[in-house]
Length: 326
Image (cartoon, rainbow, N blue to C red; front, top):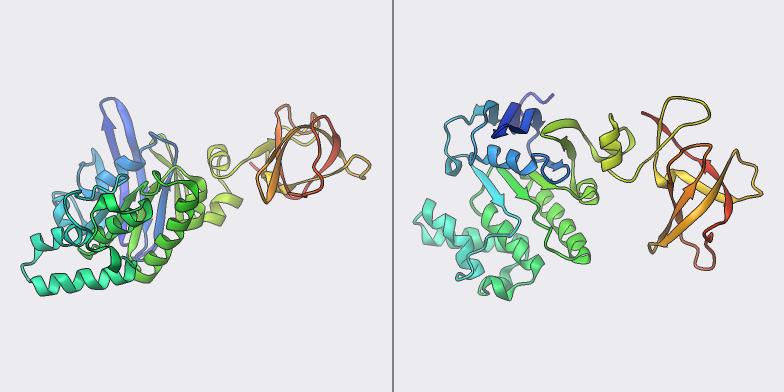
C-alpha cells in the first residue's frame, strides 16, 4: 500500500436501481503511473470513472485525490482531465480553439494561454494541425487533439474511457504506443478503461481486473498474466486452458504458448488430435483434443512454419512447458 497515493478509492459502491454497478471497490493508484481498469462490458469500469470525476456520487465509500476526500467537490474543481470514447471535440472549432476553450474559462491571459497550447501541441506533435477542424483529422490525430484538450488544463489525474475503440487495428496499436510515450514524458497519473486485454497488457503499470462491479485482482501486467488469482482473471486476460493431469481433481492454467506440439513418434506422455488450425501471421493457432488432459478442446499456439503445418485429423504429441495450479 502506498503512503501517499495520487488517487485512493476506498470501499466504493454504486447502484443503478437494484443492480450493483460498483461493489465495495478499493484501489490505490500511485502518482505518475498508468493504471488500467479492465473487464467485460457492463462490469462497472465507466461507472468508476464517473465516480472519480464527480459526475456520480457513491452510495458509500470515499474517493481521495492526494489524500483529500472529494465528497462535495464539483467535477470542475477536482483537477481531473477526461478523454471520452468519441473524443467530444467541438466540430465548429479548430484544434487550437478546442485546446483554448477550457483555458479561457480559467484564465483571461491570452498570451499565457496561447503559449500553453503551443508547448503542448509540440509535445503531442500536432503543431501542424492547430488550424484544422476535427472532420479534417484522422482518427489518430483526433485522439491526440482530444488528449491535448484534457492535458492543457494541467490536471492531476487523466481519465480515459476506451479512447481507441473506434480505430482500426493497425492504427490502434500505433496510437497506443504514442499514448504511452506521452504519458511517460508528462508523468501524469492516468486511469484508463478498456475491455481489450492486449491493450491493457501493453499500456499499463498496473491492471485492475473487474467483474460484476468487484475488483478481482490488481497488479502488474506480468503478475496478472502469469499469476492470476481466480479462474475469471486467468480466462479473461489472455487465452487459457484449464487442464487436469491424470486423476487429479485440481485444475491447472496452461496458456496456449506453453504447449509444444511435436510429431507422434516423439517420446512424450500426451497424445492429441489436431481438430483445426488458424494462420495468424507469426503464429499458428491449433485446436486440439486430448482426453488425457481435458474433456474440452485445447488451444495451442506454435511459431508459424511457412513450409509446414499440422493438418486437421493429425495425431501428435504435446509437451506442457509450464502450468499454474488454480
